[in-house]
Image (cartoon, rainbow, N blue to C red; front, side):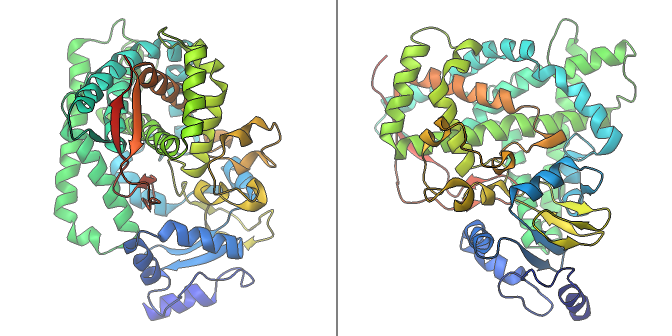
Length: 469
């Protein structure tokens, strides 16, 4: 172990780039980051390192040398050149058991094939049809919040609540099934949460692979049973005339328009799109309400715009396009709280020199985070840490197109980006039309958890009141 560590440290490709803090024999930076993780300050510390160094190396004995960078020009190169910067084996080892060979984990022709299959579900026509589902599920959300607002202990934890809301919407949109998790929490959602939190643990606490092996197998078995049930029900109930993604795949298979639609293939599609459809929008919603509660003047502007644009009408796609200030609010929320923290680490397939000057040999693992680049003053100004939706009124707010990457960019940009914006706008509009007012129970600064998905530690607990019908 000591020999491996010394080899990693002393033979780092570009010695002009510093190592991260507390580089120890054998353990490298692992113990330091475990310490930061236990304090719930790991992302803040990594951000401070980026501010100090611009780029740096991390040595983790379980996954090797990692190169962290933050400049938009290098982010652009890495995200656009998929041949030179392939998916890292670290990402595969961490997520392949959950995602299989779905769109998040595949590359090359297989990835392109799956992406083309998925595109129709995110088309303009399909997204317009989704608003009926948003209204249906938001009605269940309104009922739940009305019950909460009527009782003395009128507290609600929004982070989990919005996960239930988006689970219901995307299961219906993607797979034609009704979970009704807003009416009764489903174990399926808890299984997902446990698995993802365990993936984070596997990065910093490699021994958890052994200690939690039995629990991991148990939860994975639950996940497989849930997914198998979804697929079996769709086959049994029929797919004719349905527009959900799973039914479209089954119909194309029946017509022999596509081949290779095995149970494993379908399973991987369901899992990948379940995660994409649930977590991204849920995190966007919970973060947005958190910031709105901290900034009542922004909240009032949002309410005023919704009243003027939507009024008492059912919110539509046309309305969401006209909610310009709310778009700025969502962008600012995504800037400070991007749903994905460490976007898929890449590995170089040949020697490269990044635009930032870093010289990297073949086989170097490179990592960036939107959480870092979104908070750097050299791109966003002195108020980079502040929630200021008005900054987006400036057409030149982006000095570089790749300084704002909450959904990635380049060929692998998130297919569901527009859907996430539209669903968030629809949900916020319906809740404000229904007269709900939210206020944070605790306004102290939040700490963060998650190296894959960015969550607030201890959630976002709000007092909820209904101020008008």
